[in-house]
Picture 1 (tube, rainbow, N blue to C red):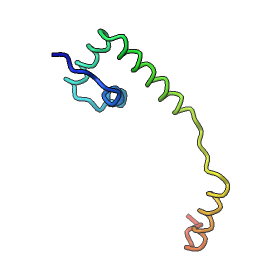
Picture 2 (cartoon, rainbow, N blue to C red; picture 1 turned 180 degrees about the horizontal axis):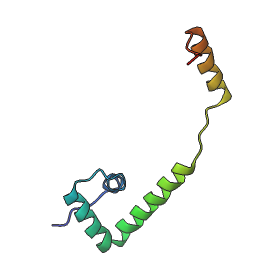
Picture 3 (cartoon, helix red, strand yellow; picture 1 turned 30 degrees about the vertical axis):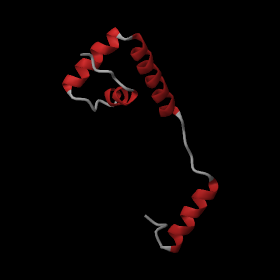
Length: 77
């Protein structure tokens, strides 16, 4: 019986969170299943794009943090 793999399995594979046995089965499935391979490639691409995104807090958030730090005397490190 062939185990159906999910997107969660692919994410676990990408983050190397699978056992050796699971990894071996998934790699075999990737070689056999074109749709699974496409889903894997799409996840890889999405994750690479997310790694490139620069996220900065808004000025309002920064001011609120600084205000709270000042009120609790945590502004100096």
